[in-house]
Amino acid sequence: MELTRILDNLKDADGNLANGRLVIECPNFIAADGAAVATSVIAIPITNGAVDFLLAPTAGSSPAVKYTVTYFLKNTAKYEETWTVPAIGPITIAQARGF
Image (cartoon, rainbow, N blue to C red; front, side, top):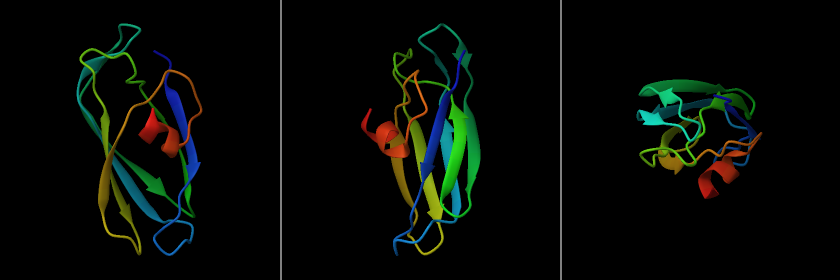
């Protein structure tokens, strides 16, 4: 399976480049290409706003799943959102939110 690159710069609540981490939870699923993806939790460090990592695409998965992403940023309250990841990339976090 080809992974999708997530490439972006994040800012905190004050508008500064973010520092902290993302915690990404993934349920098990079968990707659109038939590859099995196991349940996992990964932590992605954020330094000076930069994020650059790979995720298995969830678009077209069986069952239909989304990643649950929790943000732990300095100077910002913890928050959570869900992402759908296409099989093409790189994409930004805004694209993962809206896909």
